[in-house]
Image (cartoon, rainbow, N blue to C red):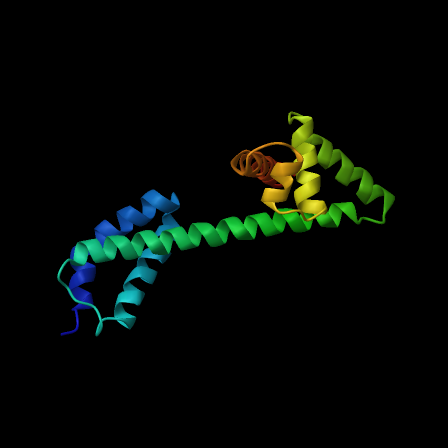
Length: 160
């Protein structure tokens, strides 16, 4: 017997929205994610069983939000990586000067190994494992440094 999506939406919609807000920390994205959750239920309503709807919706909401977070991180990482490659290949002297100034600002308060990590990973295209081996760090340590660097670079980019 198919589940009644409208009834689920009325009864569990607020719970799903709270979960999405908690995970995404963004009101607009949370509403979109909640709609995605119920859209998935609509698409699969004939297959689903309403034995434990709150658990089912909570799980779908969590997975949906985690997918959004993952794709968002990948997009930010690609944008930052593209920016670094773009900076590295500037032909114009003025652009290179501005880019060098921006890079100096990004690396200003970072350790020297962070610059090395960024060059190995973003410019030389080494994997996180390879980069970690080269700088004698753990993969999680390299990942943490790159995340901090990306956040600093994005904050600087937004400030400009």
